[in-house]
Image (cartoon, rainbow, N blue to C red):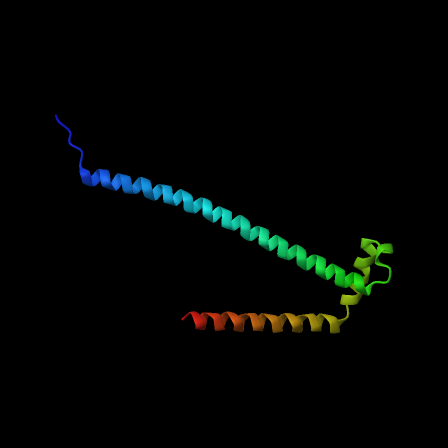
Length: 111
């Protein structure tokens, strides 16, 4: 029995191989982008921590002479009053509202 290859099947198999190669490329690209995003998030977090730590130290008298436990105790007392908790909650609520408004405005611009 003589076998003659079906050109349509060969074409589809070649297309399949090409698509599998593209899929592998895009999976690797996605992983690279996810790693890049994680790195950017880490850098942003570190920057925020360093900046806010510097702010805290600017309010402490001779911060190098205080232990971490002592600074933690100071912060617990400083943030304990109800007024401070209310102020923090108000700031968070305001920022959440602004963020939601900005998201909504961006969605409106996209449409």
